[in-house]
Image (cartoon, rainbow, N blue to C red):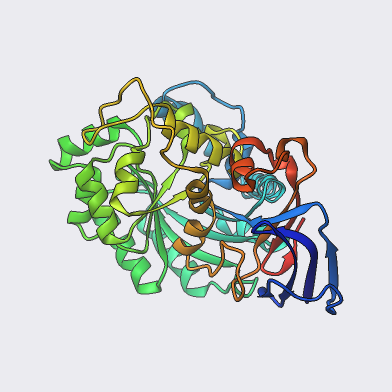
Length: 399
């Protein structure tokens, strides 16, 4: 199917953009160009779609449940007992709520870590989204469970023809032991899959790792050969300068989750060190139980403002003054779009000829987008997801 998007604002100029199949074929064609579908985008701008690089989709069922408490109490006393009661039907319903919310707010991809993944895959197929579906690994899982997961990977065939990929997702170093972490890495690399893990989310995680292994979590994972360009590490809050250098050297993608980090009191992401290291940084929402939404545009604003409100030195000590130049709007937009796409090998995340056609059409007539001195700044700092009028994923209109 070919789509012609007429009169759309792109890079400050009105353009007629042609999508052929699932890619942008031209960013400037005649208004009379033949197409199967024509979208009159007068008064709209085209922007890259969002790639939510860390979430737990089915946890939309826990939105507003067990708020305002410490991470370990929240997990052990509330979240995990609740999750033990969830059925496959529950997980499908929760994933469907999440997918609907993500599409409405401009996301075309999510990197998931949860259970009963066949149900989440079904939802992704229905919605037209992209996803990386994590096969969760926990120390408590028996060898029989582990073998069943391996068989699922071996037999998996993407029902969408290219929009779904799998990952091996050991939950964290405090829920998965050394041997199983090493097996997970070996298994993922044998199958050519990504590795998805929570990393250095809290100070307690770091303290316990130092006590148990004599080193910090990043150094521990590096010492067992876990880290590499196939690793997507969520949170990365309590990481020092040397560890950021390790992540950059190994090609790890660090996923920043500002709203979840603030809500759970996990700490301030070390923006200065992360940016200085040159590591690839992407953005994610985490699950609805700790955010409490899946709105990536909102996540961009919180990330940018959190970066500016206080500053930190190389040891992580915070001052009571900030740096308004840190994490500008164009950089956080890259974290939310092209960086996430690149992390998962998706040839998208920008509006360019030859790239996969994932994009948003946003309403310039919305009062929060006026005046249009700087479209990207408006999108990051002023807009809301209500400005999203059309969502295109893989060359198909999905909203």
